Length: 357
Image 1: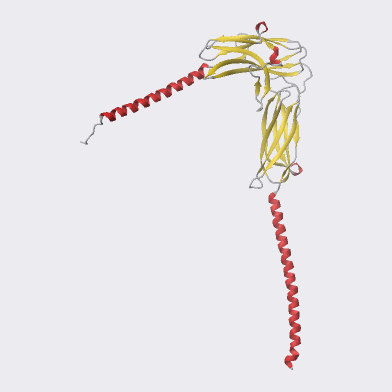
Image 2: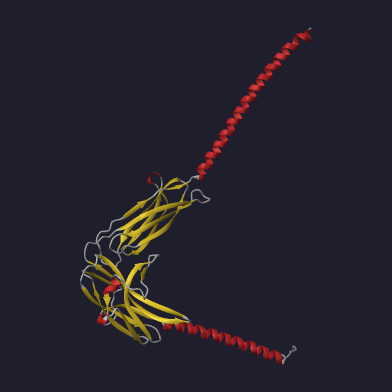
């Protein structure tokens, strides 16, 4: 039988200590993971339009109203977390962020447009609603449109805000539902491309460069609009160059401006380039239809220096100069040789009588 050796007592204690420490570490990781998951579950909040008894099928509040008109509606607030929470409910103004997203003013910022038209019970501008886990409450509200409200779209949002602490940091967690109020009057759906520029980036392959088209879009009208954009590059006689690019421009609120850049690939060093942008305005499926929308077109001029052609011209010029120099040298040598042979002939002719004598 093979010989076996028993572990010393000190070694057994060491092994037991290591195994115990490893088990404790794994247990702590499991507890930490469970705590994180539980923390994520604690903070659930949600809100949606309501028909007065529960949630309805609307994704936003959208009204067509007249100056001085009053509208009543409801909002459903839900504590989707696992702990009691106090929901702060209020309305505020909307704006477009730099990346085109639908943004809302900070919780402490005072609204001045459609957000200021909304009030709750007894004219309150905000409510504080304590809710148990899983509980919901329907919140009635009223929108009072000022008599001097300007025509067009006014954007806002109804917000649920819950303050909580993360260590020593106070966190404001918010969810919101969009609110659009279209005030009756003269509607102007007017997207414009206020500026466009282009730059060419040459590649090692002279027929595979890229053109970066940068354009600025402004909503000069009073209707919220998005757009389907087509960006391309033409060259001589309107011939298309490169690969046509298509993109979707997110909804822009009235008065907002956005600057975007699109890279058009596959463009050779052709010299003359004519980059362009074409916008077909769109309206959100849940928004009111403002009527016919005109396509917006804008173009510019860029130069793709044809270095391959420049190199060919330089090489051709060098070959031409070399050949011209070669011909000039050969002609000069031919003249010198003719003069030499003629001189030799004269010399020989002069020496012949002497030799004969």
